[in-house]
Length: 136
Image (cartoon, rainbow, N blue to C red; front, side, top):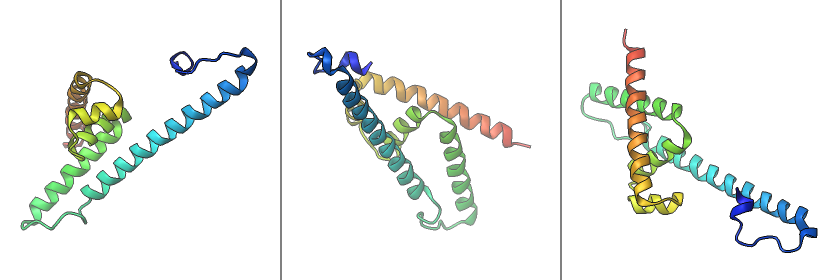
């Protein structure tokens, strides 16, 4: 796909191997950058959502329920695809607007809306599944 979408097409066919090699290296670097951003985003969410980072609530029961809720959401997010997890984290933990997310992901505003809608549905169903499995 990257070969077809390349903005600087190959002119000299004798240089095909080095051109493909540079293109492959660039794609690997872009992929590693995306993975690093995703890992950083996930770590920020984990640090922000940890019980130690949260101020203790007045009622211990409230603290336990909030901690359990965070654990359920984390487990559900881990079971979802990276694409869905990333868009949910960007929207709800980083408070990005739809336009910021669209610019980051390279998609349109309406695509962000539909992806967020589907990701929220998947998260709801994952949370319901987790609750049903854990209920005695």
